[in-house]
Length: 385
Ligand SMILES: [Fe+2]
Image (cartoon, rainbow, N blue to C red; front, top):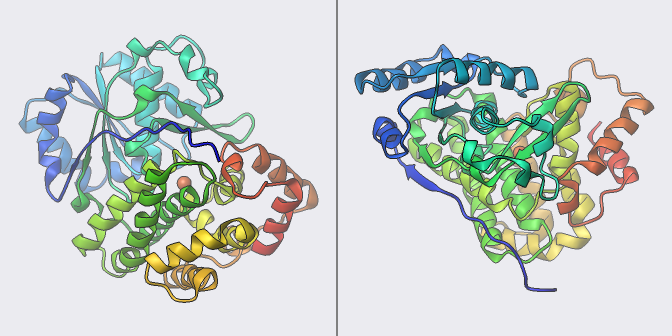
């Protein structure tokens, strides 16, 4: 193997309970005087948002609010956000929430100053160089879930409604300038969201760790991230107020997104089309496919997984690790089969073939340790049914 790689490590992260109080100072340091606060409609009604907006009011910050964000953000959400950003003469974004709010906040800050359509900046080759990087507004990211890790990422996912595909929009300057990772903001997360987002973090750490390529730092971060999720996700799920568990999950989420610059794999390649076609929860969909993808990749990853199992204190090598994933799924109430995840699911051959076509061209497919073919996708779908 050639030892040649490109490593990118994230940004300033202010980590700890209560650190949201530093938001006004963080805005000032970033030179943002008129932030647009982007969140999702569910969170907008909760005290966690009211409390944060009060911090801004008390500090005399002139802010705007935008929360018209779908769980899987679409182009019309972006257009609406940009209109508000421009109407309010905003000079930066506070992206506050789970993956969809963080991604959309980053996309608004990125796209507001661009003249080309957003799809011109898909994460393909060097398309990001088409952007006017001086026109990208700064973002302060405040995650309120522990899964996506979008707070430390340089991309945002947007669903193209015309083609029902999720597109990754990438630019190095989409990386938030500062992250406030305050685990106290996650204590109100419902159990289902705790489980789903936590399993997304696990999928990021695991797929990055298994992806081919020379990236020992990502491997180390991914392995420790897996260990943290296995130890702390059951605790965070059982008791949402367990702040130590919440903090460790918040760290694991950021670690997953840091590690996956190395690559993701077939869990995500399958999860993306299913999410785009059926609007399923991304993390729950990942969790559903995880054991089948482990099996599919076994020949290529067995040795790695044995090492990982030993590091996590799991007996039985690959089989022991797979068993632990199955136990975790059961403990968290993850649907066992696709039809448990999608009510009234009817999937004919045309639909299965469409999913296979989408999965093999998904940007994550190239990171799978074993080549993801159409037949392989069809077989993985069959197993998940
Ligand atoms: Fe993910």
